Length: 132
Picture 1 (cartoon, rainbow, N blue to C red):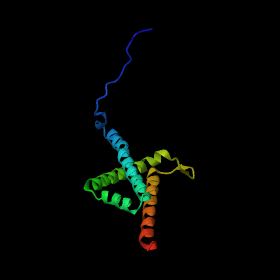
Picture 2 (picture 1 turned 45 degrees about the horizontal axis):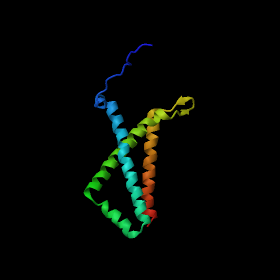
Picture 3 (picture 1 turned 90 degrees about the horizontal axis):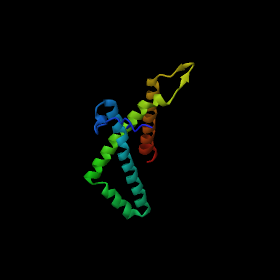
Picture 4 (picture 1 turned 60 degrees about the vertical axis):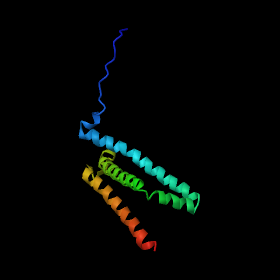
């Protein structure tokens, strides 16, 4: 047996800033921290709702803080970025064939955007017209 040391490649701390692909990847993965934060804020709101009207109103008042508003806007931006990158990855995850030909990547991505627009419009219509 030899006592050779295995080769380990040097990797700097800013390796992900060298290529745009890696930067986008790390931003997408880092966005999960903000999405987790927002999930915890909503869970906290459900807990406060179960504790009564006073507790829930105190939670709503806490969300009026400028720092909380900033975090919500940042979380929304990351969620939007996450959605866009996820839709662009959809053609790689699906393999749809129609009449012996593979469906174009643009069609798959367009259908995803059309579906989300339809769902948003349906929720908007339901909230503003059917609810009242």
